[in-house]
Length: 105
Image 1 (cartoon, rainbow, N blue to C red):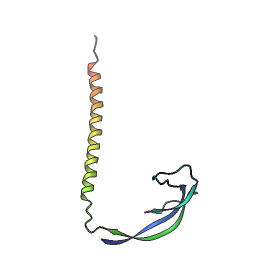
Image 2 (image 1 turned 30 degrees about the vertical axis):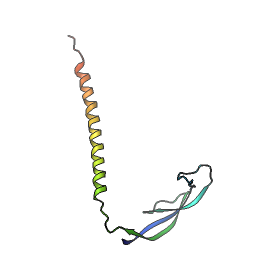
Image 3 (image 1 turned 180 degrees about the horizontal axis):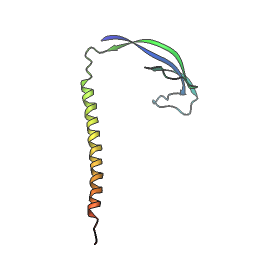
Image 4 (image 1 turned 45 degrees about the vertical axis):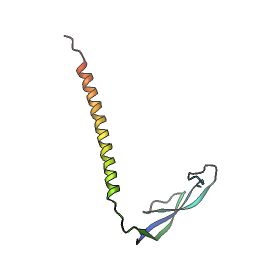
């Protein structure tokens, strides 16, 4: 694995605590928790900026994004085709209704 150093932005956020099952627990009080962002965003009453931090990450030597990119593009293509077919179906229905109107002289 290759190690890379990345700059992240550390914030403390005042939010609901996590339940052991992995969801926000509305029965507990809010608490300040660290949160890492890739960019510095605006502060507010619930999110306070602490500062930039350098972290080291391991990147697999055999990292290959192509299979995931192909899968994402295939899904995008399928979604586009579905929208296209739905749109054409609506147009065809409107055409059929217009052509079915009888004209009386």
